Length: 414
Image (cartoon, rainbow, N blue to C red):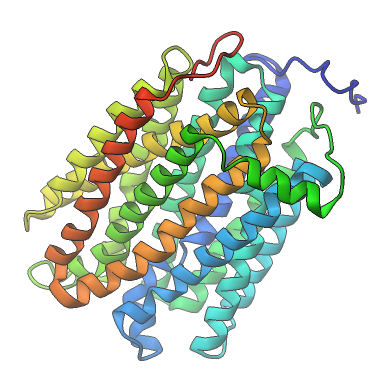
């Protein structure tokens, strides 16, 4: 194995380097595993509500508690990665969360399942806390935005694979086998990442002092562009989770009456997100991120509005457009955070953790509120909630266009 060079001498892997391909494939697989495990219960919500005799709103706790655990752990994982390194955290996260996924399949009752899902969320934090930071450190700046888009594409396909696999197995073999199947997928991806992901070469450890780590987190709250990006994360993720948490209830009821397996097929729109995040990253390597983000937010809003009519084909088209817009927004914003933090002289790991904390806080809060909105006013209630939030995303994208960029060197502008 090649020894690590002195800090600061690694210029970053470029397109065509074998290590660049290994990084891209490994983080694609890692993103797939993480988000398959995270959202594995989403298509099962009607089944879980029936199996455990809980309400629709209560069933969403199997997802909301997982994202709460993930969000809380991110506040620790990001700073810890500044001391221990990026790759060890990725490997531990993927393995532990997959094993807890197997335990979820054996949960004896509802409360046990919720506790395990909370723990699984905490275990999942290692990858999202460091993925975009690892890419900024290890890849050449000319390919960073594109690689971040590819990673987000992996998370999109992971979300789709986990949901479709979960729904298909759940309909034919029950929810326990469904959770077990996704956990085994996670273990396979964890093995692939262990074999492929190069160790960090440009990582410089920070002092292992609590005060210093707290200071890193506090400093990441001082830049107004970063604060705007955190707000984008919370609102955008809240909208996406609200829609996908409740669309299963909508399509399984009149006038559609679709079964669990058929409903899970709506998640086949997720490859649109994989493509859109990669394409958005490609544009962001050549144009200011702020401009690409503004366009993506318009696409996001247009797709949401298309889900209003009671027409299955139009709803599916709306979900596809909305998914494309959401992943483009998330791909640009998440890749922008470590770049902005680095340019501002702040800790990229801490900033990435705060971005994702906001992201999953939005998922947890809005996802649960969406269950109440559905129970109260069906799709009209869900639309009132999500249209308001996507309007905030559009307003924030315009705000970020007016924030002066910080000077950087070379391609991949703000």
